[in-house]
Image (cartoon, rainbow, N blue to C red):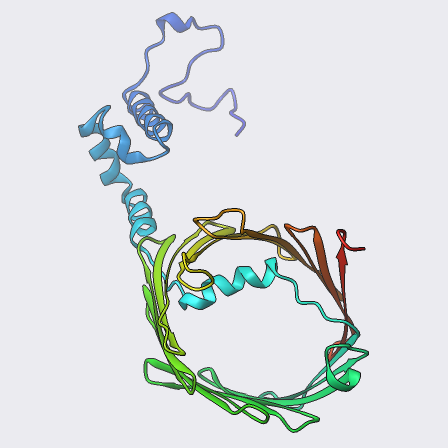
Length: 340
């Protein structure tokens, strides 16, 4: 603000040619300097206001009383927790990026929304050596209602039916999956998800299972899983740690080998369109029996690129190109440097 020469001088006015050795600070300025000094000490020690109590507990207490928001923010970060999600889904999210799905031939997918709650889909495989006859056609439909109510089904040209029904019952979220065709199967899943834990019970024609995931801190979760199939009941235990834009998981399972298998995962969200992930599976007793996968996924405006490489040098990739909003075409390829 510009001050006129005719304006009255403020109480703390200092002339331009005054000697600063004779200048005395006012009481308000001394208090202000003490406050700034206190804040500087607090930020310098672990960037935490609580640590400045060692330098001056009385002054710090007075400062905290004047600024209770600092303590509230710190307590919120330490006490605020959220559901860790289901135990099996925690590892499948990273595996989806680190492991790339490949096939031979051409795949065409067409999705059509008929209403706000009903949609249909069509999938066509051409020129595949692993499918009898070299081609396959699948028709599907899906109905989505409020409160995550879902009913969907797919039927192939051979008459095989795969259907799923999801329906919430109070705090329990129920799922029923069944297959009718060459092999008939049915499986029911019951999930409970609260603010700090998640539990899942599975019962099917081939066995049953149970898993539980608990949040220990806002970033750390611990879980376990037990499955009983064909007379065996292996147990798996795992940890999950989530940062701002990255996630690290570890899992030890009794399946895969007599000594069990150890799996380590790491994924990072680079941007809204780019995600990276890596996965290591190893035998704790024989580390030479290890498998490592590194994958990346890029979501572009009109396409999605997904590629990965494993420890043997095999490169897998697929690219999905949107022809128009309801139709897409997907190509997949594999390059084995050791054999090619």
